[in-house]
Length: 227
Length: 292
Image (cartoon, one colour):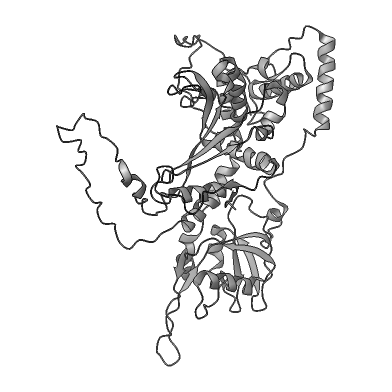
């Protein structure tokens, strides 16, 4: 609501302060194109400055009416009155967290629910002699299926996470584990999780906080985009 | 007292009554508003949003080079300019020239100085204008309808609009000093992104046999001023101008179609600036190909 009011106010200001338009150069006198432009311009001006703005100054009323009809027909043929798509997608209203169409402008991240009912990003282990970004790509396809076209953005990890230290039954600490994160874009397709994954969801940064545990969130929150 | 509700937030109701006439500006002889009016964006800008939501992060990760610790101080190659020294206070500070310019290292990679588009400049030279300066009118009008820029249009005092380019010096048989030979326009902000949008969506896909902007060969010198200034430039043939929807709608109005040079000016500097600038420009879906 505020956004619309702001933009329309700024557009009105800009229209009021704009330089005059050189009709003579761009249009032949009395052409259909000129009539059509004038009609559209009048409509825009009246929307900006009120319904009484501007006056019609036609010398030849009949010819002007004929031109206007022709211009209207031309506009209809070209499908001028196509409506814009709404910003809210049906998947937003249905709260379909598996849809990639939700939250139009925001960045969505893929979260998986593993066998321990914990939500996390797709992850796996590195094999010997493998580079980190290659391992990231292999592990992503292993957990999310081959039915998506994805691209690992950079060879550098964008962040890392160390889980809290746990003790083995004998009392000695387990060897330290580190998870490195890589950024990837999905171009097309959809996640089809492997058998060991219980569920998946496409979430914004703010939604992720309520899914993952506190320690994990503190480790990953700074690598996620606020946009 | 009942408060009236506005019919709509986007419609203009009734203009306020003018109690006292506005003072007339001596410069323009037009009524001068009592406040300085600055106009801002009039619509959300898709490509700008794309930059901040996706490209900026990606470019940071793609172009990141890790450095251990702070950098050593730069080698003093000559006496440096000290504004507090009374001897050099009002003297000219010449820029560093010679071969050192191309070897200047880029600023350290941080989240604050990710490569960003500063402006786009379009430039058309019209040879016929040398003989007959009225030929320049078509060029100027084409640039005006391509970009929508006019001098101080929309109350933006920093916008110069379409500017006439004049010959810099006398070249025998070709050009004379001071005669108009072309026109240029500098785009910033939403106008810049709108131009890139129409270029990428309507023009480039329709140019015949266009594979992409050709990259220089791998053997090209990477220390030239052009390679370290962070500007990506390419040209469009005259046939491409007709594909812009702004021109296409009344192509007959122009005496002919013109080719143009487009410069994408980014904030990248130092060694490898050209590569970082290309990474940014290709993020706006302008394709680049290697010479075969």
